[in-house]
Image (cartoon, rainbow, N blue to C red):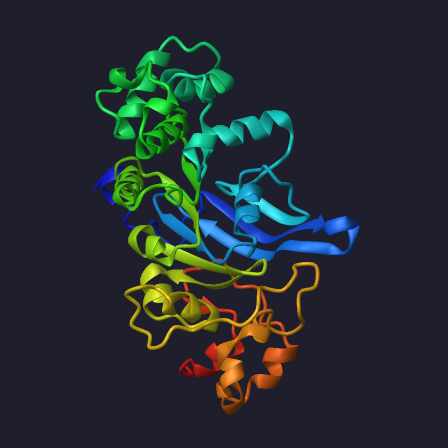
Amino acid sequence: MTALETAGQGPPAAATPVLSAADLYVRFKGRGGRGTARAVDGVDLDVRRGEIVALVGESGCGKTTLARTLLGLEKASSGRVAFEGEPLTYTSRRLKAFRKRVQLVLQDPSGSLNPRHTVYDAVAEGLRIHEGAAADEERRVAEALARAGLRPPERYFLRYPHELSGGQRQRVVIAGALVLEPEVIIADEPVASLDASVRGEILQLLLRLRDDLGLSALVVTHDLGLAWNIADRVAVMYLGRVVEAGTVEEVLGAPRHPYTRALLSVLPDADAGEPVVLTGEPPDPTHIPGGCRFHARCQVLASGEAEQAGVAGRCRTADPGILPADDTHRAACHWARAQAPQA
């Protein structure tokens, strides 16, 4: 069986992740210089070759900061980012080489594309930055556009972004990443700005790139329905931490953390009883509460279920800890652990 035939089936557990974070922290000065915002507050996360990982959570939970740090656009306060097992170093030469192999796809294709550049120039830009004047530039641009679903590619060479639909613009952005033949794509809300009619097409394109090229992807999204349709594994983030992680079937089919359950309960086709309306807003990342960081909004604690399980005190005072990056379905929740069958 070839590498392409096995792409998308998930690499063996012992395989070195293509991109990983270990004990990662990113801190910023709070507004007006008050306090320190713990945007990423201890995260272990692996992206393995040929898999799609969805990073989900509410706005402000730290998922975009985590993605930017994995790209080397933000520098970690502590911990490490590694590519194929080698720690990321922040020298300009190393970063340039790294960013050729790990490419970013942004949410808004209109904002990503220079309106004065043709499609050809937009796709060739990264190639020119990283490799200069390549003799095979036109062939590689055409191949990237074709892989992104713009066929025949020559028809699009001299078009400008305003002449394209939203879906076509997003395909041009993806082609601009593919032209460098990266191992990993980090896609930040890749279909959020698109009409519902074309979202499925872009998601199918990402799945096809995984299957045909063995490409890995970290997809940052607030949309659990999107995660269900595209991901192999899911990491749910809340207030700077991953609070639940596992395969898409485990996390979205049998969620353990009350936060994940609340997010799933409001999906249109959810089969989880009444929607859970979380009280209040996520806490200020400069003042993360003690104990479980979700406890002030937790429906399980508020309903008395945590008290019945004998863990309410721990919910309020004991940090559930950082989830390891492994293949086990885990939740950073005292109540979930109390419900788990004893070995």
